Amino acid sequence: MSTPVERIRQFVSANTFFGSLPEARLDSLLRHGHVRKFEKGQAIYKRDDQGDSLMVILSGRVKISNVTADAREVVLNFLGPGDVNGEIAILDGRARTANAVALEDTEAFVVYRRDLLPVLSASPEAMLEVIQGLCEKLRAASAIIEHNALEMQGRAANGLLRLAQQHGKATKDGIRIDLQLTQRDLGSYLGLSRENVSRQLGRLKDRELIGIDGPHIVILDEAGLRAVADGPDA
Image (cartoon, rainbow, N blue to C red; front, side, top):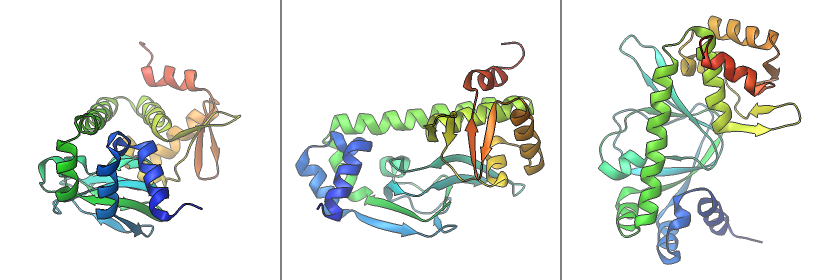
């Protein structure tokens, strides 16, 4: 039977840039890192907190968001098992740029900048993976800005497709988005009010493009949903 440290090693090696590290350096990080547990609804960190660590989500879900000047929450991302968060803090050591909250009971492997940065500096392949991950997040953020300028149905369709790409699981019925989201959280991600989220989901469901399975959304017709996302002039 594997020990907790061995299970963490297998997980981070298989799912993150840690897999590109030489064994001795990986072992060193595992010795210096630690597992943190967060209860559902607990703040993991807040914007402007000192950015001194990186975490790998081992289990659970995390919401990354900001609050606008008019007190409106904007959800930037949802993270699940295998996702990495805190790359910016590791690279520049400056304050956090967003808020992170546990959407459900969550475990994360945390490693501090002082321990990780020297390892990355000596491991170009792993550093490149970190940079590539940041590039993917930047592209995703650009897509959110672009999509949120669309009319409401296109906005909803694009947002669901983004969630399916990151959190989707294939089932016999379609692509199940493996997130339990309130309509408020989903609205903050799509740039829609809770009422408009309900309205747009209902319209997509009536067109048999999506289904609702308890707290989960299932994409029944990906091509049809993508046609809605592309708009009438696509």
